[in-house]
Image (cartoon, rainbow, N blue to C red; front, side, top):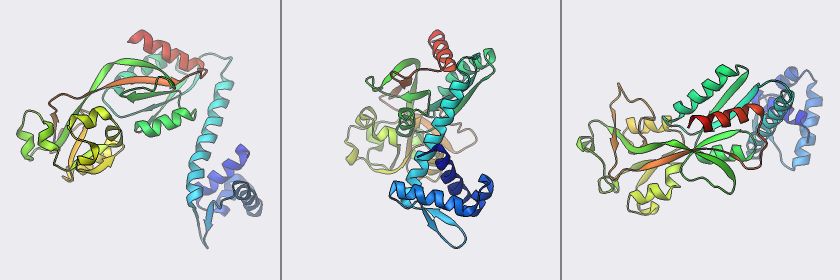
Length: 290
């Protein structure tokens, strides 16, 4: 399977049309159709549902599109690293990071490096740990900023001298908003909005003094910006990291927990992965800074 064919497939998927893709790729539609037919035969799955006016991806096509994007992205990343391998410090750094206020400290370090080496370009991707680690494992990130325990068998890591604090985000008119802090007994019968990461965290679940199946988890989220709308609609009590979003000029308020619940932060990379020169520079600067 050639990168060129993956590029053909992605162009068709993004344009939703063989004819539009053929024009972009500067090739005839029959030639493009034959290439995709060969690809489908090789994969033993149909990738497109062909309609009269447009096309849609099959379930296999949706899965393959994600993998094709990862492969082509990794190919471009490898090409970029080799182009700049023997040159001065320049190139692209890809970092996956969960959302928190501590990311601002990482950004400051990146900015310091970029001021010294202006030809280094940073590309941040937000997401939860499950998605980010998958992309790190596939070589699409140089580093990930993660929260909680680190799999030390798979990753090299630096534990950062910061911590984030869990809190509930609720409506100012809610009866619990008058309390100084929220206890497990206050919420363990109430509808909860929890992140995928918190549900998978033994430390977080144990704070409630109950098992996961005993909690009234009505909604889940991966990125908190979507969950904020759930909290505004009073769909449940949102557990999130404190100050992760600015709630000034809203009817929402953060309430701390008792007992306090915190989470550690680490920056990780794959073991045995050869770092590019920009990645080495960033890693050394992080070590020096902290």
